[in-house]
Image 1 (cartoon, rainbow, N blue to C red):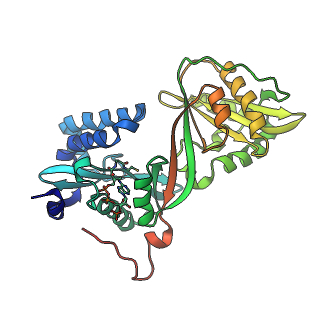
Image 2: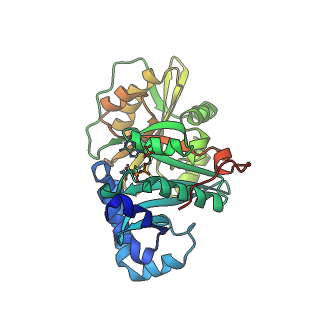
Image 3: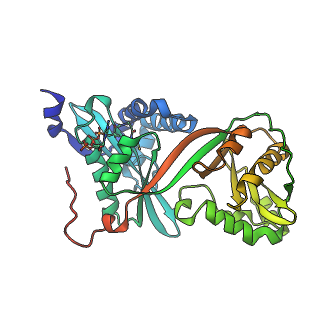
Length: 336
Ligand SMILES: CC(C)(COP(=O)(O)OP(=O)(O)OC[C@H]1O[C@@H](n2cnc3c(N)ncnc32)[C@H](O)[C@@H]1OP(=O)(O)O)[C@@H](O)C(=O)NCCC(=O)NCCS
């Protein structure tokens, strides 16, 4: 029987941690190997380790999906093997549940048969059944076929953002000749800094970034509270003739990497960024790698000049509320 005819006899069922973790990790490796970064490889190792740990798997099987991140979803089984997967990752923000569809993967031997569409549709239905407040996914900008699949199901682009990475132990860049002055952040900067933060990292997308700007409030009291919580945060401001151009915040609370957040006036970011990046990289202590998330196609030259490499550019897509929760009967899913 050919794959094409037998696909209709395939089964779409919930992922069962007791038997699916290892085949799903193999499938994810097959489908994403060429684009997988270090965190992706760690994630795979984590799933595999879990797959070999019978006590953990037992606990996972009985736990609710909102505690056992990130191993929930559905698989497609065909010819007695797992050939498709979709993962659903819950995030809680302000008391609401936002779900992320991830790891949509179909084995190369079974593609263009409708399996990817069926899995994504099941993910949508799952989110609907759980009355989530929003459903998102992220797709690399060099994956137009997957983007086309999501668009055909109603997902719409909300943002396109790049992840930049500075390797550990990299040499700081030469400071450019520039009239921009770099100083410590001041209390009085905060309202402007917060405004620029909100512009660069809009509230709508912040649920999926390790960023809570209020943690970066300057001032003695805030610094003391950070110190007591063991948080390591350094901030610098860029100024030009007493005009505030924005700030850079280096947040050392990442597991292995630091995060760098830029809250810059969009009008002058090209001017501020080179001096600010050079100052941050010269003045920081330690040599850990740095991750930086920024709107795509902005400040690319400045980041490269400072030694950052583009890790990926992701299109953030969201299912509009009227598609997630259609009020009329005209929208129906082809459930398998
Ligand atoms: C993306 C992927 C999951 C699609 O799975 P699939 O089972 O082949 O997809 P389907 O057969 O359900 O196709 C659904 C739609 O996707 C689009 N599509 C899928 N593959 C395509 C391709 N190679 N070229 C163009 N369009 C494609 C088409 O719009 C297609 O609809 P159509 O068949 O009516 O034209 C699969 O190619 C895959 O696993 N890729 C590697 C992992 C990956 O990139 N996942 C997405 C991460 S965001």
